[in-house]
Amino acid sequence: MRSVNECFDNVKEDYFKFLNKEKILGKSKAEKIKRLKKIYIPMSFWIENKYKKKKKTLFLGFSGGQGAGKTTVAKILKIILKKFFKRKIYISSIDDFYKTLKTRNKMVHTIHPLFKTRGPPGTHDINLIKKFFYFIKKKKFTKTKLPKFDKSIDDRLKKKYWFNIEDRPEIVMLEGWCVGAQPQSNSLIKKPINILEKYEDQDFIWRKYVNQKLKKEYKKLFAMIDYYIFMKIPNFNMVFKWRLLQENKLRKRSHSKKKIMSFNEIKRFIMFYERITLQMIKDLSKSASVIILLKKNHEIKKVLFR
Image 1: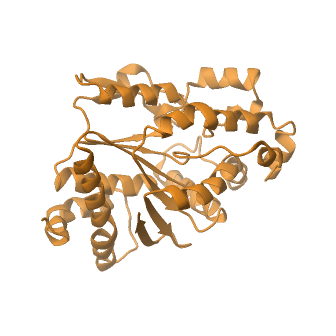
Image 2: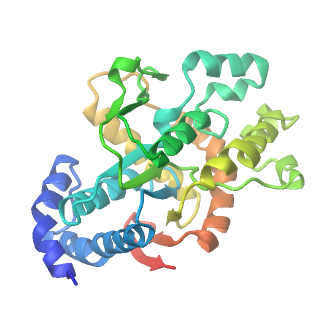
């Protein structure tokens, strides 16, 4: 039986390289070591055990509020699973499966103007994700391509820039804010929960359409996932705070000031996500197999395994 310490010795160098590359600073080396040993390595052992039990490609859903840190945690888990357990792991972001700008513009004119903003259910090409999942399950695997979305142009890139999948992954992680989201009852849908819903969706056409998508296409996709990992934020106010931090980081990194949101733009933007995020906190707190509890300072408080 391999131990946590053995795993730590094997992955620590790659882990620190990754933290430096991502400019994840501010914490002491001792704190970073503690996180690796107490949080990321035990999660990786849990995933490895689930894979060994299934004996074929394991599908994981990884969700949590915007800015919670899903992408960072997913990449750290990939380092450990690849380096120590020698697993072929593929992390797919639901963001890469956004519908094209042309398709979403059509939705603006034929369904509702709020579909101009990507993110909520209905703006993803769910059939494309399902095709990918079915493709992996096939007996004979041949290389395939997956879409790549460029947020700076708000559109999908041309096929020549897509991701190449050469080998069948042993572990697939679908990462995204709404992965595992459940639909609501019609009575809840009718009650606006913020000013965006109250004034820009008075006939609740947008909300109903989003909810309908969760009831049908998204439900079918989410049923294909074996286990869910959920990053639980302390409250919705933190989404705004953390999203603001993300935009400030982007501003520092980016040479162009285009597409970087202002304070008021972020405030409006997160209203698109509020209803589903709050419902997910209720639902996934009960149904997820792994719950990562976050503190208000963005630190991981603890990890619960079920």
